[in-house]
Length: 328
Length: 185
Image (tube, rainbow over all chains, first blue to last red; front, side, top):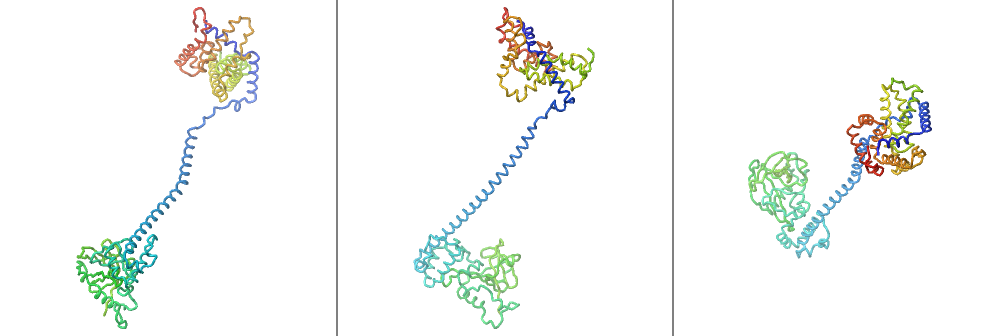
């Protein structure tokens, strides 16, 4: 079989007949007459759809939407989680403080005298007490301590972790023997030893030159000095290498109600300075004289401002303010 | 043939009458549908008229029309309608009495008619790109270079497509082979 001949004969049969040719010619001529230029009939080659641009723009829009959605959804969650974490941390801290309080109160309740005289609320170990409440309880104990001195002394000896001078948060108060100062506000406010340590200097009684008027009579300083001299034996005398002529004296004694009290007296260039809780470090930053306490080899910074002496530790931490009274 | 100005109505009518069957067959070979082939044919001659070209020879004109017919047929075959049309539509068109060759009522005997229908059906069962090459090579008597120039594909590609089309046609036409048992391409 000759494929070429057979295919030619068969393909000729698919040729359009005369009618089909005339019909097509008429339609072509009609199209040409209707639109000779062919602007509308023959469609111009369409530009391909810019799929890359569409994909790029769509992807960018989708990414922006995802980022925005994630930000909208996640930021509140993160904030809430931060609040939860901080809340849990604070609750953990409060629980720890409560446990410390419980421990300390348990140590106190071990004392028979405390059990006898303390209020019922102080016996409740399960109640979470704050720092101030513990201090109040200590004050109450101190007020009632006249009849339980021996027991409290024993408790202090047995429970070194409980220091009423500290913030009541488990600070053991391992102070050096020659500790120069302490937070006078704590000792003044919490211990109630106003008969020995004068909180605020009666400035009305002080003249401009720092001397007390005669009509004041026996000044509080004399009383304090007397109390200190009588009740508080000086531990040791220190030598300050740089400035101090005399030494500073810090003493620790047991108050009349059995609590440990530290009384400080600084002697600086012949002037005695006593703790003054009404003056803080904010009033005067340390900028000044370095003093070395050779007893414990600790550095201190002293700043004199009028009759007020500010004492700072070597790293600049405020220790206390001391007021001088120059008696005639 | 001298250069003709085909913008004249008479000349264009003559050109259509002479080349329209050729364009129609090319379109039908590619699309296997009469309606689509007629649309493509009209489109080709519209383009021909609006192009307003001046041809240096009749071969130039024929080559232009063939290439335009192939491109238009490919565009029509690649349209969404033809891509989503079922493949069986092609066979239906081939079995349609309207699509049957005009020689159905001729005086040739039944065997010849059956053989020619078998040859045409075998060509129509080839892949699209092979059908056009086969038609141009065997019916239009175009060389490989001319087919390459008309379709825009390389000569080697045309040769390989012809070879593969023959291999595909052989098993389809072995039934109608002669005494030698082979199909002479």
